[in-house]
Length: 271
Length: 214
Image (cartoon, rainbow over the protein chains, first blue to last red):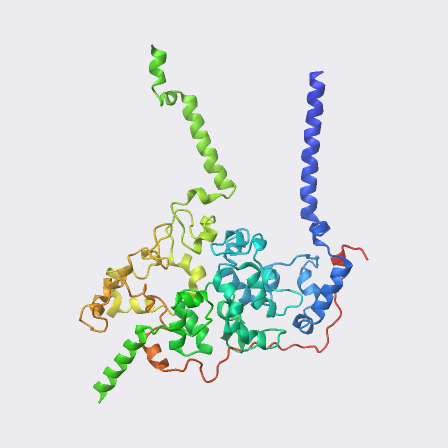
């Protein structure tokens, strides 16, 4: 009697293990059979429309460019950074060096706002950072990625005050698609700045690069439009940074007085 | 009587070989599983600096076995920040300045940036007056440019940067002095995308997204 129940238990145990293994491997071998990855015909139509009006479509970047493995021709339902990188190498490489991407570069799970030290919106805490988090990969307009995407997660005072700032007024006043033009000042303008690289204008996606020291942002970003004194007097005023530069700076950094005195001394010596 | 005595010997269980072996097995299992499950956080010797804390669970990002962290490790990520290092190899391999390396081992990142230790700001372990190792003359008469300034204010006041001072050097400020608050031609680099086609082609995948359903 006892041996029969033991045998039954053994058979049940083996069956459970086999079923678990089969389930595990089926999702591995046929990843695209997982229901969550499929879209409805209606969703697909919407995505096709977004793509048809995008720069990708006109640049002959078709569905298969991203959704098909170029060697095996296997369907890829959710392309990752590697797919974007095959064309946008500098963007992905720099993204991986900033706080947004560094965990991915180091082989950990992607960053989520829940891990952040800055205040983040409760509704966004579980979002995982990858290209698709900020960019709509089907419309590929960067208008959305330049402000709205940031404010989906960030809720510190500097971020929230952007929409009360003169920079935002300019952005709002200047048309929209497909990307912010050279006069618009968005979150990305300062934190993911455009850089001239040979004949190309690339976007530095290392979001940490211009943060510290602050003078790096002055030269890389502010001085595209502002004089050096205005820029320094603003960016070294913590209250003004928090207010997202809502008013002109009040302080006059002693540095500039020292440089002026030096100039006077040098020119009097010259005479 | 012996029973009472044993009650006052908290380490008595160590006399049992079985207990010692069990404790060691538990320790081994704990450390082993930490390695195996990649939960290496337990090996962290102290607080990790802001930024690095995000990937502190990945020891191998910076450590190769028990070898010391090298400059190459840091440069894997910080190459861009170090591209125009004014305190770099180019300067301090020059015999005119090489001797100053005896004051601070300036060409080794970890001489100032040791991880998992207290930082005085900007990821630096040395006291903020570290510039005085070589630049004492700046605040004490010899150069007379910053007489009576505090010894620890060079970078904490936001005026000087150790590595990249392209946009804060005296030369840069002199060149750009007296600019108006808005420059005559304000504008960012403009990104223009040129495309090959005028109208979009047909999408080349369809059924795949629906899993074979129509």
